[in-house]
Length: 108
Image (cartoon, rainbow, N blue to C red):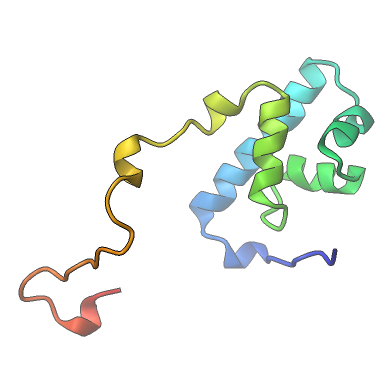
């Protein structure tokens, strides 16, 4: 599968910082638990180059890979807890209305 290129300047700073934090945790937990890079790669079914990208916080690596690595290392719930049920409730087909008096070009 071809690598998707996502440049750092295309990623908001907050997201970039979160990915870098996840990468630091992945590397720290892997080394503290004495898990060799090759063993974690085999468990995640990824290459060592991809693991290096994860540990650097590369935004081009898939979010699923970050979450799988955090789960394998046993820190998923601390690093990415489930959102509150209230955020996922409601009808996805319900339209959002603009506040009264707001112009259409001010919306999004």
